[in-house]
Image 1 (cartoon, rainbow, N blue to C red):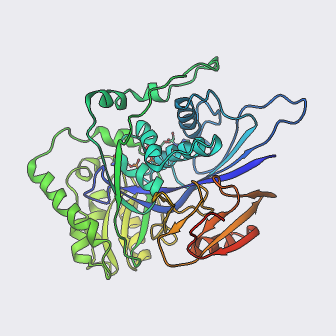
Image 2 (spheres, rainbow, N blue to C red; image 1 turned 45 degrees about the vertical axis):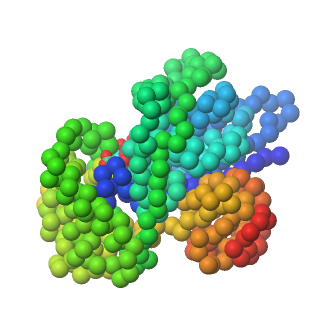
Image 3 (tube, protein in one colour; image 1 turned 45 degrees about the horizontal axis):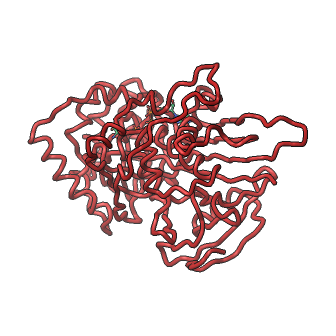
Length: 432
Ligand SMILES: Nc1ncnc2c1ncn2[C@@H]1O[C@H](COP(=O)(O)OP(=O)(O)O)[C@@H](O)[C@H]1O
Ligand SMILES: N[C@@H](CCOP(=O)(O)O)C(=O)O
């Protein structure tokens, strides 16, 4: 019988000003993998994984599963579990809404999608923590991958490892994800470096429902690696204290209702990365200094998103004026931008399963096991199976239904997807 499931991973905005390499916020733009494993037809040899890619990055992303970031990460996770290859007759359609190299966590999402793909396709039953270990072997700052995996506004740190574990976690990326030569045989790249256990630790902060995000996205790419090269190796105590003071205030201030613009605007300033990146992003200092809560009512704070060049504004209103004025500043520098606000907004609701693990909200909630969900909110959850392109999709874990929060259910309905099975489950206590 054929088996299909969907993995859905959100974009993220890292740093939020002072939280360099520490905080991340998931956003409502997604990388979605529709995955099908078909049994081989009698007499047909099993075919290798087929990758189809649409949306952002489609013209540049490799479709060879041994070269594509998501499938290479999946293969790395499988090989750490002694599984040499993907299941036969695997087809993956990646539909991507996250632009590459803009500071919206496209690579973090691709890495998390690879870990979730491996987990679902070979039923590895990895815990959230173990998934994070694998992701952190590839993307070594935890801010994006953690927010992409668990959803919401999160802070994370990397545990201090003992010498042996430190060595294991510091192997060059080329050994974790080796480039596959064209003649790579089945055993090639086997026995990769395994991640130490418990590398990353995180906490989710509160988020005021009235705060929305506006992303102002310049039409040029800036690789995160390049934007990290311009950063110094050491900082003055004054600059470190400047950031620490603001970060401590920011993580609580963004959860308060109503949010306080004066407190948040100042708390989103930074002296650790943005001043050094302004050479790569003409217009950055003008945008962050001239768009303020007094010039733009509704604005709470404004910063570089991740390594840039996207600008992230947090606001309760006045989205268009913020974005259009930022556009005018960039235009004077000869840079065109696109901007998105609602539904690029509140972090998705998250769900907790019986083991207390939280999952980022997926439209079809399939990025993990859907068994025995405990729901964070008091709202009802509906279990559905949906039909996409004539195929019925169910949860990657229990394969019986997706568990949808009402907002996600409305989105499924708005997308016009055929819901082939539906059951209302009020705060489920056991698998259905
Ligand atoms: N969905 C994807 N599938 C495969 N590779 C991807 C995907 N998303 C991003 N990448 C890779 O990651 C690169 C961008 O990563 P990076 O420079 O860290 O920028 P950012 O994460 O801010 O978008 C892309 O150029 C591409 O090589
Ligand atoms: N903390 C990192 C975050 C990079 O995020 P990305 O979305 O640009 O990949 C940094 O600032 O370098």
